[in-house]
Length: 165
Image (tube, rainbow, N blue to C red; front, top):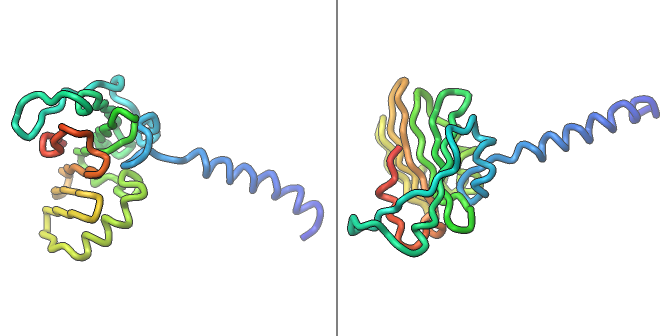
């Protein structure tokens, strides 16, 4: 490679690396602050009143649950729930298209795929329980919804069954 080519492509390669590192997205196990990178925020980050399995409003760690709702460019509404540390432990979605699960599940996508292969699936319904990820999704043309959570990140006293897409 000539010196001219090296001078031309070196800045371009650096710029490409910079763009690649800036494209980190939120998702399970990531900071809630990154949720806005998944779509256009709808409102502010909100505290969520969590309900325990008994139906009573939970106290303790579950009271520190925060949620951020965004709308993806495809029109899917995604809500990401974070624990007191700000780590996303659950995600819900609803919209005309299936969201990019690889983006939303983050590092939990590979375990999800592995568990999905081992789980019986129905045409319009999928309930996958992996080693540390649970994903329930349903849908058909122009109507998809789902919920995913990481049991080890769920705050004490928070019941993931209360999550609604």
